[in-house]
Length: 181
Length: 427
Image (cartoon, rainbow over the protein chains, first blue to last red):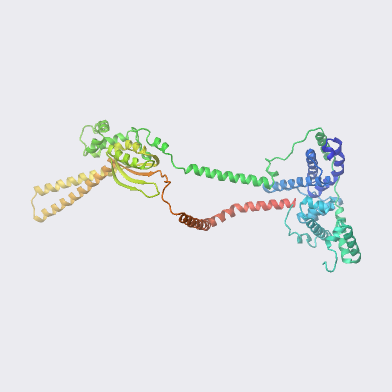
């Protein structure tokens, strides 16, 4: 990235190839509409490109990319919630569950969706983005211990949900923390 | 699972599985897991959860995204930076800061508008504008809100001149100008009484509040104005208090034809703070009075004729005399009423209030420093108590209404905000 910001045009390509799939996954698991996930992925890379001239390497590019992705995700959520609340637009729906792969997706999405917002985010960042506890703490602005306890809680709740989907709503036991995301 | 039975916390087991522990801690946890079935079970649960989640696969990125991003990258490398799609003018992109700024701005604008409009609507009427509107020239005199058509003053003056010798004397020039018109209207034939002319009679009242710079000079000028216009003060009170502006309250009577000129002169005394004029139409009242008076006089004459021409018993004579006395009393009362009414028409009533523009004197005697400090402290305490009481009274008086409004306005806002938060959490 530093090379690209110095003007090496071909330096961006390997970065993009390396992170396009993780970033797409990041949005795909967090946004119900796949088309929206594509758009947000594209938007994130564009934002990185736009800010390339100002880029200063202070952390891993991965952390930087997810931080940008997070900002764009929050803006999207705000926008969609605003439209749904004040303009009466329907919030984006979920894709129909057809086929085993999509069925698993839907099941996972539903189970993860039952988690409390911040717990869910910590879990997804750890499981899929493979961020370290410290990186998650930096990204979400949380103390390290909070990240650890929330991650543990989220994993246990999810285990209960996936092991016995209908028997007990375990996630709700932990849903007393304030919504942050 | 408690720390007494297990030397490692459950979170530590998770951190161990995630590779987040230092080597020594990791070694301890690994050793414990080998010994403790319960903790091994927990580790199994955690591994299972991660394993299930790993099945959540994501389809590959569509090529369209790749093409679009690489195109943009090429543009950026060529030195062209694409514009930001976000716009400040799109409220759906606003964060809480923008909302707070926007809302605060609207509130501030509303408050400023309220303050400015109240300042405009409640400011004191300016004297210059008033003077121009009410008395554009000494010839065209003002009647304020009860102003009559243009010929009105002429008729009033003509009638007055005909009815009262005193008034003709006051305003002989103007009366002479208007008299022929009134007389000509009578067609030369003598009217039943001079006052019964068809012209309206108007009793005028003016109220003036003037702030003067030099009180003594204004007082002298007032006297000379009254003298010049043949008016008089029916009542006058002057107050001179220490450390306060001097003031004068007077009820003046000024001959109606002189009113405009006298008012114009009075206004030169200082700054007119307030002025109002009104005219009461008393024609009907006057006509009634005159007719009743005439009837009574005729009755009296008839009674006298009876007394002189007829002879009768002494009782009858006495009864007629009694009747004459009663009618005479009525006549005198009505004559007094008529005179008072005509006086009101002839002499306009001017309620004048003169106030001095107060300038505090530098060497005015004031109490000792200690006393002033004490007084200020007492006043401060009283003000604080008054303020607290005022707030309590306000809450008592307007609190319920405010609560109602808060409920009316706040409930929809609360519901919308709640819906928005839920929606954001769900997405």
